[in-house]
Image (cartoon, rainbow, N blue to C red; front, side, top):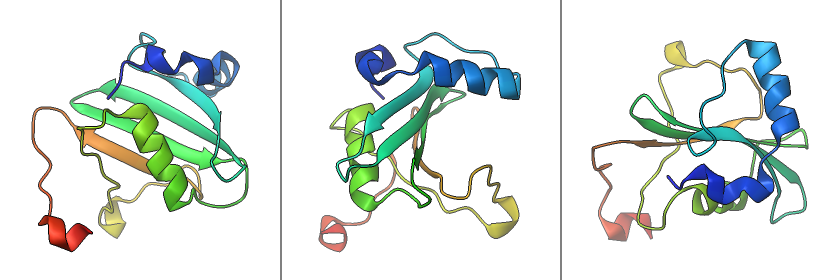
Length: 125
């Protein structure tokens, strides 16, 4: 994942303070986490919470509209937060392990220290 200071033009300290006050969580250093608000390529507002830690890079993504982010929005977020050479993924866990704090939130993940297996290129195209 990028050093998140590179995305400071999108950083929202006000929204972050609100989330921290509500959850009781502690903020880490700005290069490894934060809350970001940016325009979507489709005109909506994207709200992203990003964190680097515990062996993972993670970005949660919502919009200001009552819908899940679109594929193009998730791709846009992936390109902003992750390096071009990094593979990241959306994860679909077993139903029993699914936790939802927001009905329209999607996530992008990347583990540290391991290569994410990928299908052959011809299957992805």
